[in-house]
Length: 202
Image (cartoon, rainbow, N blue to C red; front, side):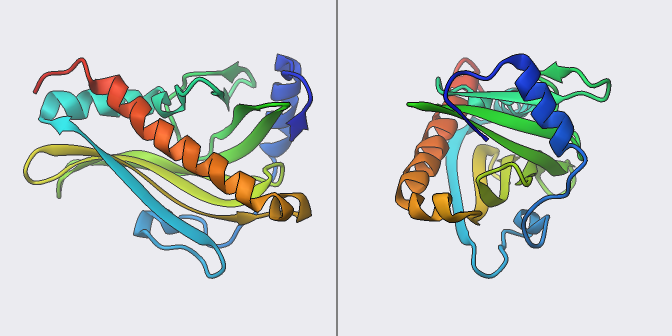
């Protein structure tokens, strides 16, 4: 949904309530859990080292819970609560309807998604994260996973795994621009997560 001015809270709530009753608009939901994508989608994996040790992992986990990867200066995140209220910092839960609001002059862009699954594993290494997938009101089709993990050496990583393709003619015609926006978001999201844990000393 494209707006020529910052949308009012009622506009954001109405969009979330409308999209909450719809299914995702892409093939094979959950594919990012296996680091795969359906045929015909662009697939990307990007990751960054956050640090080492339990304290870093704990801080990174908390940052994901608070959607800190959206602290990039031109994006905001809104979540539809179970009571119909709209929140900005609610821990991701499977089935949630959310929307990012991107400031992309001269427009504002609302991109509704649904949380497809969450990950909270402690057995074979430590992992925490979630994935969300696009809803019909989104200009693209696809899924994006945000994951914090600690390897067997105690090094903590944050990764973004995604697959996507254009949903309609406007998105296809503007694909080079959309692609640059995606790359900018990923780069700055990785940096935002580094900032979120840089106060921690292992």
